[in-house]
Length: 104
View 1 (cartoon, rainbow, N blue to C red):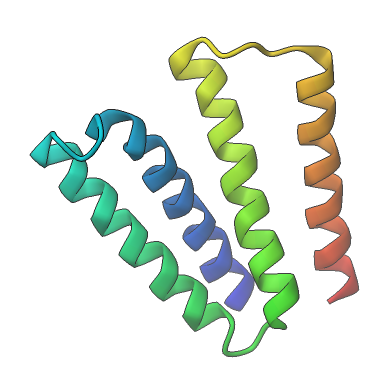
View 2 (tube, one colour):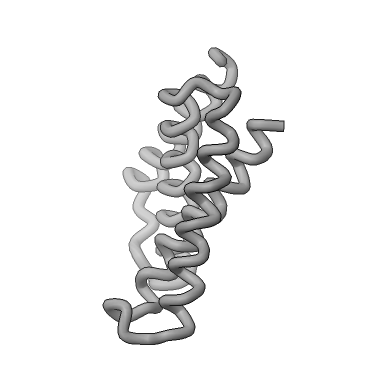
């Protein structure tokens, strides 16, 4: 169950990271409110997951999910480059997350 909670926490991390782009420096109320709510939910869920998961593993997986999701949505939503090197590095992060999960 902790892994599922950690995954959802990672998705909320993606939400707030992408949300930062839409806040326009925290000058837009709607996006700012949603971004701040996503931040809170993400950290609360992370803390719940860390009750049973090792902190190093949990934090690394949480940030990895956030990094992967944010990088992929940056490509999809903002036209950021999807070079082979960039996609390869995302693949390495995925491999690291899988490795941490298997080692836990």
